[in-house]
Structures are given as structure tokens and as C-alpha cells.
Image 1: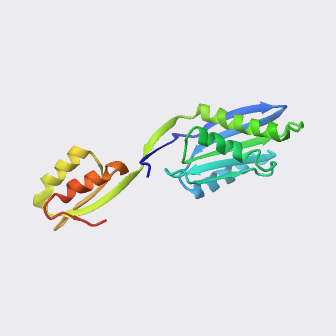
Image 2: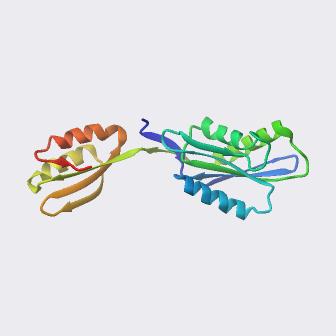
Length: 198
């Protein structure tokens, strides 16, 4: 299981023209299919006068959830070349929409493939590519006298503290990069009386 992935920091735009057809490309960071649907609907509405709004997306650190949509262009000439660029950049949690304004001259299937691929590249060239980690949470309870031992582990391993509570027992939720979780869990379990709750 990967514990990091590459995505883009914010929306980036690019344009490409071929035989008077204009291609507007938008690379958008997303995390869910619902977000993808919202953006696609929003861009189709914004560019309602365009002939096509084709797109592809990739989701998840494992890069297993993806889709390509030709939106009325000949099969495989738009969504696939866009998805191909997402793959060649090794990105995920990304949606690329390419809006086409038809210029009156047909491009043919190979011309369309080149144009959609190039439009996607133009947007990606403007994007800020960032590496993100896949993080997991651990929640546990312990008695107050063990606070120093717990805080030593936190100081050494530097996880993010998501929540902490001090009632009769103390509780804490920590978040850390997936690859470091086994080590964090092992160190916490060495603290006397500490109970992992989830």
C-alpha cells in the first residue's frame, strides 16, 4: 500500500489551438467522485456554448479509481489521451476537463487524440505538483500518570494531534503517515495500561 502520492496543489489552466478549434484545459485537484461530478457540471454550464467538454480523472493513493469520458467525440479520442497524461505524470486525486470550441475543420481521430493530449499537457505544465502522504489515525486511552510517557512518544515521532481529552481517563487521537503507523502503535503499546480504542 503506497503511503504517498503526487497530485496538484490548485486549479491550473492551459489552452491549445488546432485548425481553428480551440481547446481549453483545466486541471483540478479532487478527492471524491461527487467532487468530480460537481466540477464537470459546473464547467459544462460555464462553457455551455462549446461543442464538447471531455474529461478524465484518477482518485486514491492506489490510483485504481479512474474514468475517461469522450462527451460526444469519437470513442477513445478525448478522455483516453487526457487520462494518458494523468498517468504519464503519475498523478492522482485529479480531474482534467478539456472544453472544445469547434473551428469548422474536422481534425480526424488522430488529430483529436493529439489535440486533447496536448491540451491536457498545457494545463499540467501550469500546475504545481505536490507530494501528499497517506495518513492513518490511532485513538487510545491511558491514565494521567502515563502522560509523560505518551508525550515522549509524540515528541519523538511527531504525529499530528487530532484530539485529546482529560476526563477520568485521558484519550488522544494521533495522525501519522501510514508507513510510520506500525512503529507508532508499537511504541504506544509499551506504555503501561494504554488501551488502543480504534
